[in-house]
Structures are given as structure tokens and as C-alpha cells.
Image 1: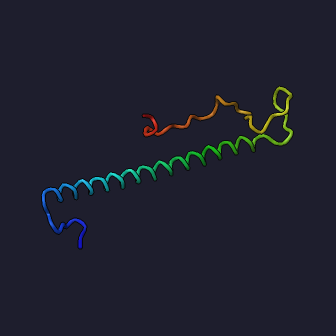
Image 2: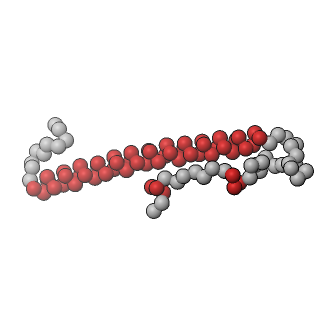
Length: 94
């Protein structure tokens, strides 16, 4: 039996079916948006990890910076100000 065909199509049953179908469509759309955002978050996290990994690879163990001090793994020879800004999707801006 098709899901859109009612056995007793009264006005009340038709209204309930329409609201159920609308709710199902809304849930499916929310799931699609959620999946898209999850993928975008993972992509941005991987990009950030790659950027951090590139910064760490620039510094060798025991490398000495311009000021004569040993550079830590967390610091970057380029500095924090020269990093490219990462755009935040408009969906996160409420």
C-alpha cells in the first residue's frame, strides 16, 4: 500500500498526513545540512592540521631562531600574524 494513499481519507486524516510528510521533509533537509556541515568541519580540521604540521616540519629539533634561542615545536618562524585567515561559513554566524 502506498504511503500517500489513505484508507479513510477524511479531512482530519489528510491534514495529519500532510503535516507528517512536511515534518519528514524537514527532518531530511536538516540531516542533509548536518551532513554537509560535518564534512566541512572535517575538511577545515584537516586543513588546519596540515597547516600546523607544515609549521612543525619547518622547525628541526634543536633549531635556533633569529634571536639565538631554541625554537619550540609550537611556534612558527612566520609568526601568527602572517597566517592566512580561514573563512567561517555563514551558517555558524547566528
